[in-house]
Length: 420
Image (spheres, helix red, strand yellow):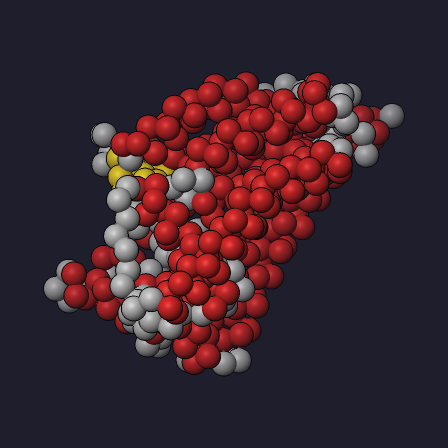
């Protein structure tokens, strides 16, 4: 498969057609979006019923209505984003990337703190809390896809090709890491995969992976030393003096619990994982049935970070496997778009955005079954709505925009062949 650096500028046609006819792009991805939205409504309603009853004096539908509003808004975003010619995303990529850097710095020092980390800023007019890392992720993939297309001729050269590509990835990941290490690592992994497919030198990629592994190794060693010293000590916990130290303590604690398991039942991470395991064990093969979850009353963030155990509890191993299958089909369809797209920017943009969504989904599910240390990532399109949900919808809209343009190109080729 060969790529060309240029992108054909096409103006979307068919504005006079009805809505169904104007919904273009990969029909399977559209079906998966609707399917995940329906799953989200069912599971969020189930996971928040007791919480809503307690917080809103018996009104159990409050969070359901909020989620329905987010889903309607999200599908609207998918629709309008897929109608935009993806060339426009190439034009705004650099501007968005440059804007995301000061936003991440601002969030780091002045952002809203939750779980000892600064991840959010409050949007002044609508009052919604926004995770700036979500905007930064989207901007980075747009910018990286643009650069990979332009650097195809020199991509094997370290100074001319690889360094200009890895530098933006490093900047964004380093700015996200202090507040959200798991997101930074998952984003870095997605970018490395994209660079590998974009024909970057394997030697350069391995050197980068090796450099990243050094601080991670130090983190694991620190967790092991901390575990040994806590066994010898009286169990008194130290109070952290700053935000950064608090985050380092959290990282060490999570790695420690992952390696050794939590001994302290009152510890938040241990409690979450134990309750998630109970939910999965109760689910069995067929599940306890929709709305019959009992662990939703005990599992913190059952509607958000830990929504997957509720799915397994209510729909069993079959339901849990079906969710994994949906994300894998989504990745397969995105790879198909990548292979069909003749232009580098569109191909790499669709692939990069699908990688990050599927890797995030796998990481979320892996945490629930204790295959990965506790992270703060949500299950895309299923967890309760927020800025992450809307940015996921925007990413899917952009993937469908590429698919729509590929369909238009293939349609024109067919017309020319039939005319001959």
